[in-house]
Length: 135
Image 1: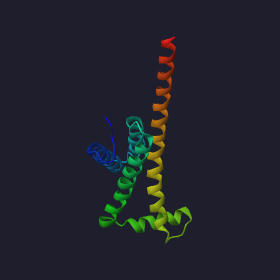
Image 2: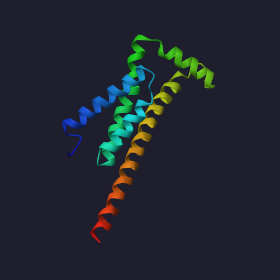
Image 3: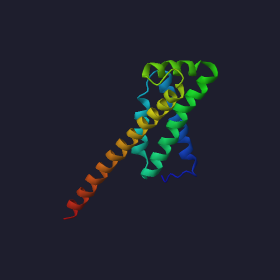
Image 4: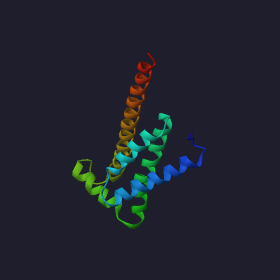
């Protein structure tokens, strides 16, 4: 199945990945972001589309989660306290929030990179098998 950003399948997969990442974060299973990135890397034939969808999904799930929590919970006071513990000062909560989103994005991109590497490994093996089978 050919997948492009114009097709509905791309947006459906993106929505499912966002929901899985969000659900994982709700139950403290932050590693679900790595797993969904891995699955996206394995599922797309074009690497660029896999990385774009991973980037969008992780930004929306991790960043969206922090935005949603900021309406109902004291996110900035907690972030300011964590920033103080980290040595950034007690008014640098924005640094903690940005680092949280960057962590989620990097986690997803590492998973996608791993999926693309596994896919390339098997594609490379199959190419050699067909070459030797023809001789």
